[in-house]
Image (cartoon, rainbow, N blue to C red; front, top):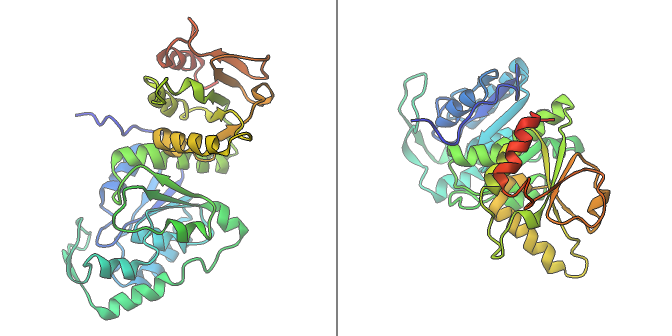
Length: 331
């Protein structure tokens, strides 16, 4: 049966190398690795089985970085803790267990443990004692030790709003500005990966390639109905538009009522998730926005961008909007 979420993006990270760093008790044969190889068919995915000893794991990862020079490193949970310390590379830390020793003790990850995924060496079990927990604590306490201003911009942290295993958002945000909540749990499934991780991968690949995508501004009044619920197909349309365009959400300036600002940010975060992070503009002067397209309901002045009047006969539905941009082919 065809997966409704996963699709291929052969042009993203084309010819590059991704390194994936798995979580505690997992392996390089995890579902996330399979997902990466499916989504990026023209990308080399390096995903080692990490040694249980954290010092050995860090040594292996640093050697692989030297050998493979990955364009992007993704780390999940414990792997996010390791990835944060692999300075000099673009990185996405997904639900990073930055205090892994505390997480191990709090969730019974001591004693005899079963690997969650098969490993190349065939080993199925491992044992965690006090000495190993101490080693993990020592390694994790090296976090943030190599940060400079360049590093602060090269690392993204993604944190599931339903993660019941770790919560290191505040700690991460103290050191890195790119800390983002997404809708999901501790384990990354197909939906949360495609809706939350993929936009960030696009941003990183665009920056690496110096790629400038055409800009679409969307007025928030086009996205919600009279009950502040997303209009039909708006979420699906935006997810498809960001595959080829740089999309920004536009709302009225909240200068007269700061609560309006918080309400709009919360609404976009709820219904458009990571897509809206850092891509929301508050202004009462939409005609001054510099971009390619502006989707809004009512225009007060001529716009610098090509204007699409949402709700008109030509663009009555989001399906009609999507058809229009499909014909443009990303232009």
